[in-house]
Image 1 (cartoon, rainbow, N blue to C red):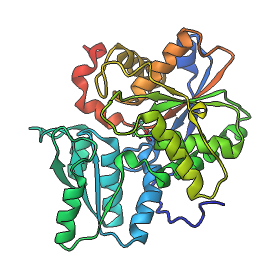
Image 2 (cartoon, protein in one colour):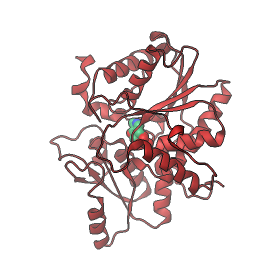
Image 3 (cartoon, rainbow, N blue to C red):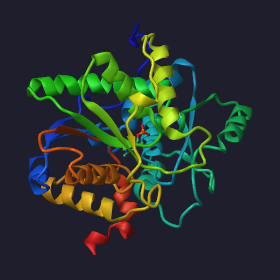
Image 4 (cartoon, rainbow, N blue to C red):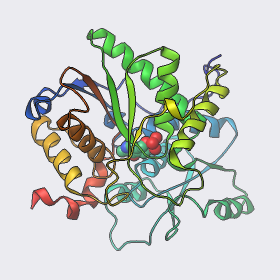
Length: 331
Ligand SMILES: *Cc1c(COP(=O)(O)O)cnc(C)c1O
């Protein structure tokens, strides 16, 4: 059993820092709150996709690919980190982005352009529906394309979060701290599946609570089933004798609000509080929403003062520059 023989390309700086948010905790009269700073993975302004890409692009290189294709929203953090990683590894990069080409390039999209990747505008198809035809064209042109799945969420991406959980547990041990919850933004499922499997393998007792970010009902497989099945497939890939069912999953969908990327009061408060008490940037789409959820769970007593919470900062702050309209608190 294991994944030592699975190819991996170093792309980030690990371990990422673990910090305690004493000011925020005091401000909301909450429990101890720690933060795992994956916004500092070091690749092109950081984020959780850096970890996944180490394994996924390791596989791409092992298979002899010369061109990477992936998809996402116009402000996708996944696409930005993929563009940077492809540049570093000498791979051509094609991004299939939802929406139309805007007049100005901003936030993550600006960075995609700086990394020199080619962008295909896909209208309403923000989840990669157009990828097969682009792959065909690339093959006809003599390239060897490799498709990185939406959000980097396949078994290889999930493996990275088994590794990440080991990294975290070592850091917690060093500061002689135990936690009762891990809270994070869950959106394409790879982070969630990897943490679930990691917890099982490490025999840990904290709860892994994903805050659902996207209420999109158009997906073929419901999101909760997708995560469970990805955890099972990942266990199988590494030869771990582990089975997961619905009961093992905690996915909180109370905070999806008006949908993916629609910023409301919840995100505004979480972003302003975290910035103004800790000097830490959250993003409007993912971590702002997840922190808003955490703050709410503390206020309602769902998470108690005697708990000890780890908030996994998954990155995303470059999107702030493209979402200033939604940040009402700055006005
Ligand atoms: C992609 C992303 C997530 C969600 O991670 P998944 O593994 O796709 O569920 C959370 N936060 C940020 C900033 C992201 O870019």
